[in-house]
Every structure is written in structure tokens, then in C-alpha cells.
Image (cartoon, rainbow, N blue to C red; front, top):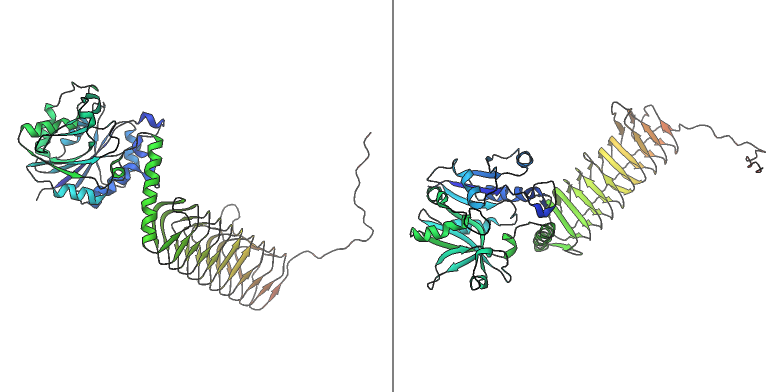
Length: 457
């Protein structure tokens, strides 16, 4: 069985992006275009992935440091044929080569598998697409028997050839042995003065190699991004696909055009997502979860029947069933909420484990804390967990009641059923059932007069 080597061309500068960042590192749905393509190669079972780099080579390599990649340097950009040749020396003759592009991020694994299924040792497999406006693309030229005979680039095409709307995507598959025969024969006598990979099609015809054609399912999956405008079109198309998939699985979206998924979002049935929500990393929403408008949720799990009200930020958190969050709440990494917890408006949590039925309803900061069941934390309460060097833990046992505007100076432990009076600064432990009041005694001064402004000279 032939091995599969995927060659991804990623050496271009992308000058029309007007950016210091290499073109292939610009992002679609929160990850670089190049990473999208690398993941497709992994999904279709590539034995080895080769990336041809040039402009910004170090940045490109750094971006994929965790991937198993073979790198090939194209020091001078002399065209696609020249680029493939740089990777070919590391590929054995008996391997099948699939050529992809680092700025074509939406190519589907299904389309690639279909292309590869048409290929064998004695064929050249091409991926084409029909466009309403083929301007700028190489045209697929066929003979009277509908066989492909050549690919002609836009600048080299005749008037009749420009009328053809079937175009080359650049994606093709052929054996390394054939490439090693054809690439050294490429000429640069064209309008661009480059070595076109597409010229191997005419060589295949001359060598009586069968050319098999596979068509892309839709034009956008083979659309490259050379400008920020094209990048934005890819983004919106991809987001529309993701939104459609969510709705097919039982989620209701208030407006599918105002949703951004920058990672993986899994949803149960009867999930509702309001407008302008962003999901990053790995996020899961259980059945009947409701997400209000303008929420940002990152690497978090939200169990069934939870409600997240408007303008909340949730990152690295785990919510059990029937929790209510917000509006305007921020759950930071390490927040774990048991069932029926309520986190209210302008509350921030961090590394907080909050027990069943507990409430932190207003204007509070709870960090490095262990909170039991049915605890009520009053408005304006903060855990003073950081002394400028080290962080310390606050523990509130079951049924604790914390009055408003309390400062809990960690490390501190509050026992079961204890009560803390409003306005207290707690610096010591409190036993079960005790009432703690730690505030200055009120003084009322009779006859006191407010200071008055002195008259101006």
C-alpha cells in the first residue's frame, strides 16, 4: 500500500494582507489558516506532512511547534512547481503526494478523501471547481472527448480559454515518482516568469498518464485568502456552517450571523444562544442551557438547565445543573459550581469551589475559596486572598451567612451555620454557629459643623 505524503505550500508573503504576519498565520475561527490545513491532513490519515516555508519561516515553524512536521525551505519564491520541488527530496518514489495550500483553510476532509479515492499509481488526480466568475484562476482545458489536456493560467489564456468557468484549485494528487520526472522539466517562459505546478498536466497528457478529475462540493471550500476582505468572507462562511450544524443538533440561535465559534462547541437539545456570543477553545452546553446576549465563554462546561444572563465572561469553569449566572458576571479559571448555585451581577470568581444552592448575588470577589452548601454571600463581599507574594484560602462551611460589605482576610475558616455581620473585616476563624462582628464602634457627635469654604479675596 502506498504511503501518503501531504505537501502544504506556505512560503508566500501575502503582501496584499498588509501585515508583518505571514499570510498563512492569519486566523479563521480562532486558529491559523495553516493549522486548519494541517488538521485536514491529519484527519485524512497522512503518513507525513511536509510544509514548504519561506517568508516568516521561523514564525510559521513556531506556530506548529507541537505538530510533527517536515519542513522545506523555499528561499526564493519561483512559483508553485518550484515550491513542491523543495519538499520532494524528502519523499520516497513510491509515495502518493497530495498538494495543499496553507491559505485555503476550508477544504473539507470529505472532498480530499474523494479526490484520493480517484487516484492510483498511474493517474494524476485534480480537484476543480466551476465558478460564476473565474477571473484570476487557471482554466481547465478539455478536448472534444472531455478529457483534461492542460491548465492555462489567466495571464496566459486566449480569449476563448477565458470563457471557461471550470478552474484549477491547485489541489492535486500524484505519485512522487511522477513528480520527480516532471518538475525538473518545468519552464518559466510565462507571463509571471515562474515554474507553474499546473504545467505538469500537459506533461501527463504527453506521457499518456490518465487525468482524473474530482469537483469541490462548493466554491468556498477551495477559496484562498490573499486579502483581509477575502479572509473575512472565509470567516463568515465558516461560521455560517458551524451555526447550521448547531441548529441541526437542536440549538436555537437568535441570529446565526451574530455568533462566533473559535474552537469546539458541543450543545445538547433545546439550547438557546442569544446574539453576539463568542465561544473559544473547548466548550460544552448541556440540554436546555440558555446563553444571554454578549457572552464570552472559553474552555468551560455548562451542564443542563443553566442560565447565563447577558454580558458574562466564563473561562475555565465547570457548572453543574440549574446554575444561574449574571448578568455582568466573570467566572475565571478554576471556578467549580455545584447544582443550583447563583452568581449574580458584577461578581467575579477565581479558583472557587461553590457548593449546592449557594448564592453570591452582587458586587463580590470570591477567589481561592471553598464554599459549602446553602451559603449566602452578601453584596460587596471580597476574599482577601493575596498578600502581595502568596495566595491563601478562604473556607465557608455549609449554611454560612456573610453580611454585605465583608472582607475575609485569608487564610480564614468559617464554621457551619455561622453568621458574619455586615461591614466586618474577618481576620480570624469563626466556629460553628457563632456570630462575628468586626467593625469599629459607631460614634455620633452632636453639634458637629461641616467645614465651609473660605470666601475668595
